[in-house]
Image (cartoon, rainbow, N blue to C red; front, side):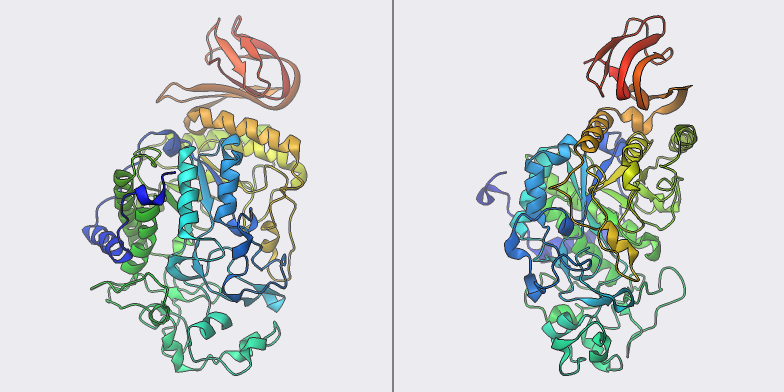
Length: 558
């Protein structure tokens, strides 16, 4: 990384916002992704930053976030950007074949806690989904220099960085944030609120709530605000305020940011809520070279807003790359994947709203099946990807929003995932058998977000994941190839990419002496390598004989 003094000058936040706003108004169509390795073969690692690695303990309790209760399900646990950088420098992600790192939204979250699930635990915004200020970093995550260092370190290894972003809602009106920014809706004694009496200290009938985000910005069902609507785009999710992104009304800065001395937000002329959010989010791209977004609650924001975000971010990334030729990975355009609850592997209208990929909710329930059943899904996915207009899916076996894949079956689950057609997403700790965490009443998903098990990794499982991940990273055929089952006992398949000719033959989860038919995949006399065992092989009479040591991953010998 070059020293800060030698970097090109970064425009101020107001200039960044204006550039993004011009892109929104221009309505430029997002550029199509080229047939590069990442665009055709995304291998995404999702780390909940707060639960992954603590590289800077000095930031653990920012904004007065309580030190007591450390380790509870809903509190901040200490993970940060410096921790991600530390693991990047150790080569942890490269060893897994990862080419993109999806991190929790790092911008500033609400400062305090809210009463979570049936008031059984204190719930902070450690996950990044309760935004307060989109223009500043959350101090628990680290500094702007630490963010720049992390992204530069990732880029030097060919690893893209994806931010989790939310355009549907800000965070809750929590007691600490309301007090910090003097929104006068609290009753005396709120500093001593408990889980049992938390909401009794907030005067929800007070019209001074207008000094929070303000009725021009959100639907909130509070005095002076619109109620949430009944359709997907205008409803309130889990009592969160809904951004009025569809409104053409020009707005100034929300009152809470006007009261916030350290915000980088500036008023934009003739701009609606959508324009501000797009400007704020794309400013991170222009300043730091963020390569893509994972977009939350996609189906609850109208498509035009996502198109505007993709357009502005695409312009912003091209600008950053022009100014940072030494730090960029390549000239590929900005990339977006979206979470529309229940979306499957098929192409949908969301792919026309700026999304290169959509998260595939279909695969998790199928990954535990036997190989004949999985082969049917592989054929289905490969056929869908070969149809007509380009699109991609992002499959997973564990998720922070659903459940963890059964820990006793992770070897099979990782094989199923890392050999699947389309893009794949590893959830932190699946490769090391991270145990589930606490599961407080009313919010069972909290147990999917335990601390990374650095002290107790399953070494054999991790070695298995690394072999599969690095093999996948070398072979776009796994993601984009035509799928052919070659045998059932042992189960074996081939994938051949018709674009570049890349080809592989795989026999997963098998051991012992094997003879595999390879006719139509590799020619007689071809010298091959089993990437799982590292042993060479030669094709004779349309077949390969070898000893399998857990799986067979055949590729042309280098």
